[in-house]
Image 1 (cartoon, one colour):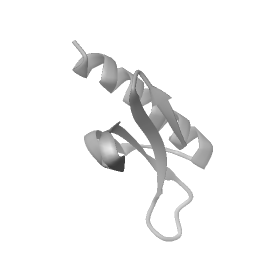
Image 2 (image 1 turned 30 degrees about the vertical axis):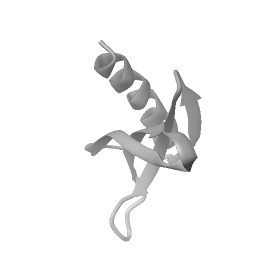
Image 3 (image 1 turned 135 degrees about the vertical axis):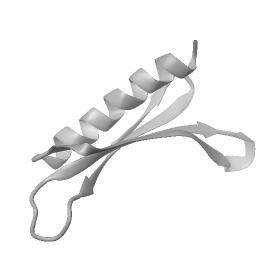
Length: 75
């Protein structure tokens, strides 16, 4: 799941747990697009100890983590 946020791209991803488990880890990424198509990763937020059972929820939570992180970095 990816969307624009204040000129940056933010992405929420779900990382599957180990084999034979049914949970997802949460990952958020903030990307900065530059000229000529290059993209720079500004921040990556991962919560390996906080897991959820639904992939869509993990992706949404990753997006929200990016919004929170962006507001902290923009200060």
